Figure (cartoon, helix red, strand yellow):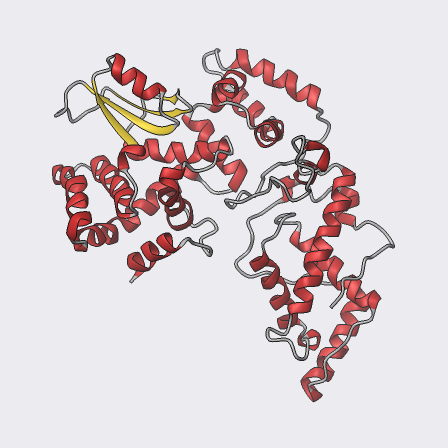
Amino acid sequence: MAEVEDKESTSSWASTGTWASSTRASWPAVFCVPQFSYDAELKLQQANSVYVANAITLTPEPKLKSAILNGLVEEIVRYKVYATDKEMEQVAHSLIKKHPCLTEPGSVTGCAGWKTSVKYKLANYRTRLRRLGCPEVTVNSLKLKPSGKSSAAYGVKKPKRAEVNFCPTYPSGETEESLENMRKSLLSDVKKKNNREAVKMKMEKTFAYRRHEVVQNAPMVDDFMTRWPALFEVSEVNAEFKRITTIPLQSKFMSQLDVYSEKLLKMFQERGGELGRRLKSVMAPICDGDLDVRRACILKAVCVYLGEDSDNLVKEYVGLDERSKTAIEETTVGIYVIKDHAASVEPEDTGIVLEGVKVLWDLENVAFAVTMLFGLMYAMNLSYPVELRYTFEVFQKIFMEMNGDKLSNKALSFKNRLFQ
């Protein structure tokens, strides 16, 4: 089913700018097919009546097909400009469910051609958005590719972990220069006492500028922390995560961890062999009955259960001597816990290290630190560390329920055991 390009005009979404990421929402569980133009809806209504009465399908003429595809794409970009294959299939299925007359005879799914057409139409639409300067698309233009990497498909920067606002447009009336001036004013604002509201307002307004920097330039953590010190506070990590995903970070992560805790404990207790012994060792401190300890033990046990080393997530040090300092500085991604003595219940310090830099410290407990680390992965657009990729996949897709429909075999096995 070949895609027909609409040459008449750029759609209202592109021309008015209402595709801006400020209007974005998470991809829906059920895609709602929008109302098409009046004449298109009239033709489809008549064709649906014929289909119900005589099972005769409609082969739409180019103008009708173009109206349908335009309407679908305008609805899609309310959520994202890069849709997955599965999401394209969801759109096509929703179309023939609402308008059965468009079912394709001979197709296994009844909508394979529509899926292909929508995919090409969306690609063409991205070309229009690129000309209009939509940052989510221009970030992938060939002129921004590294030298020697001229392929359009090389290193495409797009949402991969359920980011809703991946690379948003600047606020109306703001320019790169005005936002840079606001960033500079933030450097002094964060040093003032009782200035939280002013910092919060400016961080909100400079969000798009900050995201462009993170997505396009992939700055070193140390440099980014110097430019945006306000981001490396607990309240702003929570706020930035919500700006990016529309999901509350701390409350969701902690509540889901508590909801699954009993099932997780049962999973760990039922495991035998060498893995079972390792899990038992990790879970031993739970006997103290402290909620924070319980949460920390469960998170470490998740790592172990998935075949990963919990020391790569949380590393404990007794005293802060030169050896400990060196080990922390050599940590790429992780959480450190410093105790006065090995048997100490309350740690002297708990913090997060990224690229050898302490970015957060004096955190309440390990579970809270893990939550903040997960949030910083989104705020800095960092890839999950290879040695903890399954652990973070479980945090994202099972605990936080973000893109949970596509799991690795190991994460899927974990989920099946959790819900059995």
